[in-house]
Length: 616
Image (cartoon, rainbow, N blue to C red):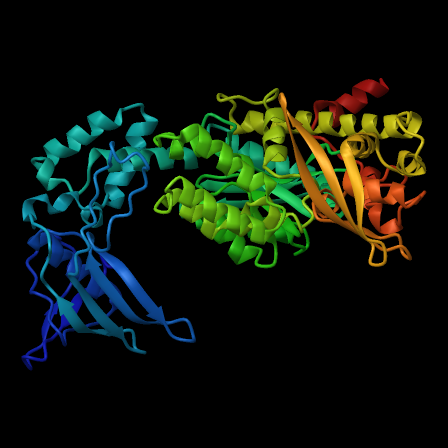
């Protein structure tokens, strides 16, 4: 039962008299001061009582902490003043501080919950460390609520083209003043913005449903799911055709995901799941249109996608630093390796560190620490020296990044196969691919039509790349047998990457550390602009199996054997690499299963009328 429907019943240990209130929904009602021993019929009733008390005294309230039993039921809860806890500054430029509300106020009530749902106050702190103002209580978030009736009126007026400002002024006049309205104009705007996201244009909902039905009729492997709100309106949509599902079976080990691409006039974020194929082309592994970007929405989307892909989670996923996305991944993909987009992190350096005196030096040293650390221990040492050198020990942004270093620092993630992707570049490339077909004024009805055209173009480009890898060959740049080995079996794009490693071998010098144990040290000369520097890598070689392992771990990360390992193999006169270094997902001589799937597109030329016309 909701707070608005449920009354409050309580009694104090100081008196045997029971006091009851029913339908306590008026926040202007006078309630008694919370005391130890008060009993309430439910947790909602307790919170409502404390909220009304806070309003009449002049402070806001919030839920601070709670504890659950082993069976998942709440057994303890703490409601506190909304100004509890200390402020955490987010801006690094202390000369332009933001206003802070937190004062570490200790005012609160603790309560114990029982098996029957009732609760009892067992601890009370009434004193505040800040001024109280009852006539300003209405500005606290907990006291700002828009009733269902007003929500309906706001949405109807928005459909009719009435501005939020005019409608809010009407409500103020009707209520008899701003202090009689339990919400702000800002709250009205937030509600209208959300309602617009949920509302589709004329024919949009039907167009999406008809499109999905027709695609599923042509191919039973077509998958779709629609998430509806309480009024039956579309909130979130997900779909994947049979080709995307087959692609996932072959190339679904590494996935990138981002929602930064707005595709339509309703600002519904386009949420594509993107991978790479054997040509390093970006491929669509399903996509959604979302009304929101909170944790629950992402959980719905990820679970839906997982169902579509036969409950087979990806090995690795790359996203930006979105907290809601991170929580959802932990819930739905607990075994999946989650990595943050490195590019998104580094592009925040100017915003977070520009206010420091030695900004240019800080930026360059930070990038060197990130990119040049070959081991975790080396990174830890360099990071500590970096913070001490520039007196950055108290920098909140850097400290937060360090706590999550296993999600973004290359040396912490390079032991996992990422198909060569270090950022969400693949997702952003997929977004740019759709730019030729949709824009900010595209309706959802138009989107589903243009979506087919975009995917058809993608399939044609893959077919052309398959043809080129099959019918042509890229000439070798060396006489090494290893290069010829990969020329015969790898697609053009991946063979070019191997050639790049072979040409970089020119700048590598191999020295033997121990002939018996196969330990080598490879020194590479790197050219950065007009400057050059040397980097050293330990390489381990097994003479019996011809297996080789380099400290740079390029093969583990990218699936391409590195120049350092090639240098050692060539020195040891190895003519062909072991089978383990030939990654099946890069081969051109394997028939890909997804190419056998005929994809039906929702087009006019496939209609019954068109076919009859062609026969005539």
